[in-house]
Image 1 (cartoon, rainbow, N blue to C red):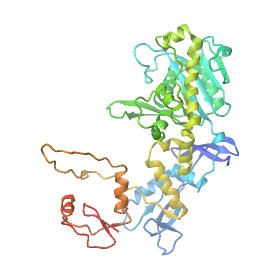
Image 2: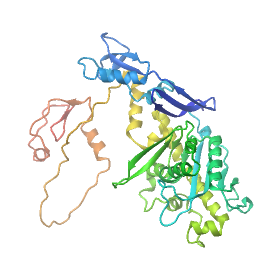
Image 3: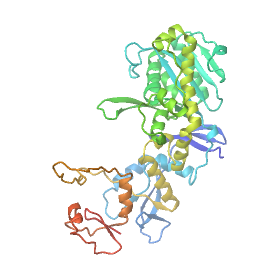
Image 4: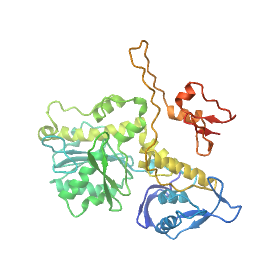
Length: 451
């Protein structure tokens, strides 16, 4: 195992802010990165080539800004191409860690967290954060201890979690609770934060509540760079938006999102609440508090069990990871692609980086992204319905239809032939009106031919 690798990198203006490990010791520094692009060469034979085989020469820029301005300047110049990766973070990671990246899962600090909040009518709103935080539990894989912050009397000796090491930090006020939590957070220095729906509840609530109760930009202590970015994202199948926070230098890998992305062997679930998923994966649910009507009542009448309930939520996440290894899978994919951990929850960024790194090893400079197409695309073929009542009707749903069609016709930018056939469509093909007269080529039903 290698103890020198990155854990997080991002661009901030003219610099890249980097976090990682060197010889097993955590490091953070700022780099005024000098990116490299490739330009059309006048020489016939060069080490570097473009994807279509043209000769190109490397060109190093003094800053990322200069590189971007150079691209804009020569964007529309004839017979002069500019090539290379304009994702400068990916370019920096590739320069520092080319080829296979060796990393050590055992020293990456993965911290599970869960908070409890008082509430009135309805669920607490993270954007408002107007209710008191009553408990916080966090645990990482480095020291394997449950750290719980609360304001009541909790007896560790009577804990239902007796087989684990629990350290309870009693506080007098919510302000003190949040302060001591932040101090411990800084000492622990997590690389990854996980938990159930932490991305859209626990983290936003903590950011806004700390800002409201403690003030003085104390919420920025959640980031080792003292930087927090906020952006609105649209909720799926809704016009509503919700806030997403990035704690710069720390990656949020919400276990709910990771489960939905990678635990496909469990199939679609009737509910994605922690109680249900834990039961599906572990055969065990959250701590039952049937004697209380809600958590507020449990907090008032049985504080001991209330804290156990909070700890249990973190323990369930930990045990699911022990069984499923979804965080480890995410890290494996991220280091394979040379991207930040959360990029694995998408599709484009990791594939862009994988292709870039593969071509880089072959001394091939990637092309620039072209402006996106503005306009309408032709829709898919819709067969005219045969109106009336029919017997023996059946419906087919093909798995991986698009990839299968791509393989069937050998579809790819480098195999497409420009001599498109006219008057070729689904109807004419089905009626046997079209013949493919060119051997060793594939003719698609839209008239496009592939080699």
